Amino acid sequence: MGIGDIADGVARGVEQLGASVSAALFEPVLRLGVTGLSRSGKTVFITSLVANLMDRGRMPGLVAASTGTIRAAWLQPQPDDTVPRFDYESHLAALTGPAPHWPQGTRAVSELRLSFLIQPGGMLGALRGPRKLHLDIVDYPGEWLLDLALLDQSFAAWSEATLARLAARPLGPEYLAALAAAETGAAFTEPAAQALAAAFTAHLLASRAAGWSDCTPGRFLLPGELAGSPVLTFAPMPRPADAPRGCLWREMARRFAAYKAHVVRPFFRDHFARIDRQVVLLDALGAIHAGPQAVEDMRRAMAEILTAFRPGRSGRLARLIGIKRIDRILFAATKADHLHHSQHPQLTAIMQAMLREARDRASFAGARTEALAIAALRTTTEETLSHNGAPLEAVRGTLADGRQAAFYPGALPDDPGQLLTPARQGATKWLGADYAMMDFRPAAQRLKPGDGPPHIRLDRAAEFLLGDKLARPR
Image 1: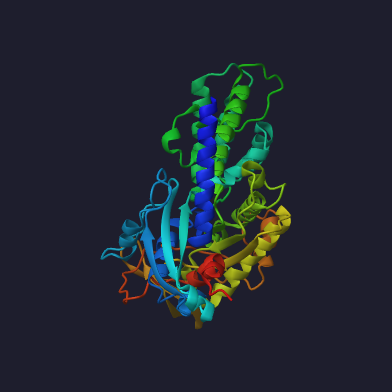
Image 2: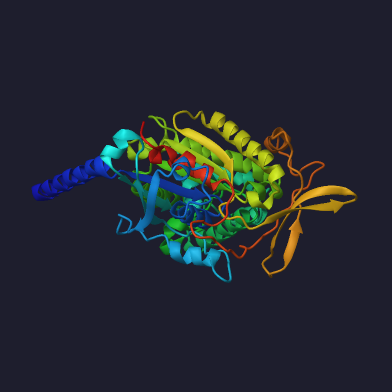
């Protein structure tokens, strides 16, 4: 690097700093990270959130909307020219068009900018006039989020922890059988590595489909342009008694280190450095349906996420990018519309209990955290069924084949400990209870002017994430 390169870099840094200061003073920017674990509905959440922030008739819980502080909201080109745009228009058409269907899920990073014109209240606000706030929504796969925990682990430690839980998960025994047949201390061959990596990837895909949350490494599930590369061709294995140079185990360890260096670190460095708020979506009902082990796995995943975002010198994210920015984190249990509203308090209590335990496990302190039960797009109506002479509070929706069906998923307990305690103790099934799941497709919508898509508590989620930035200054 020559003196000219250094000078050019300094000039660019000064220019960027000036632009940042100018934006902070005159047109502030709030960057919201949106991610979610398996089948949590990130694309639907972002689409419905943006639609309801632009047409705010269904957002009474967002104070700035109900008081008229928000005068207008509109989409603009996102500021990052190298990041794909979130395809809001296509996703909204899929959800609200004449033949509504679920849009394609997140497979890579994308971004969208929504700008607000805000009229502050009071005499001072009238003198100052309206101001602007830009909301940059950064969408990324939740599978990549949990990879941050890998940065603190050696290949041996990651392998030991991963192998310990494989036997109880889909296709885990098959991978363990393939591993037992491999000679991990023998000379490395690419076909042997590919066979093990393929078996391990099949296990991760099956586990994610079955409702498990911690399915790392995340890029094995969404490889993108890295598919088939050596950095995604490794798998967990115990260290053999003799591990000479050039053996299979050592090459797997080297590739694990390369994955952290060339995949995990750049992703978090490039996309987390400017995030201010974070929402993590979870399919809690899917985990409950999958059983106690899936619930405990989700609780552990929440703790890993909180550890990653923990402010201060000990936080992984702070060590990685050298700053502390994220000050609010929302954990949202999606698909609340699959339950009658009478059971929403139980789902919310379960989420809050899981968050409290995750906070204790992560020794987390600093940013504000919250747990909510939401439905970014409501797909059902409620009705009361009769079963053996007793009423059942159910929901009715449209199945994938177009048929209408009423559904009763089972009663969630009033005490979250009835689920979390057996999950923590290693139970393999629920005793005296059964929780079912149903897949509903989006219902046909007839939206009134000024109304966004129907939802459950999306306004409360927006108030927690954005409300203070949109509120009238005092």
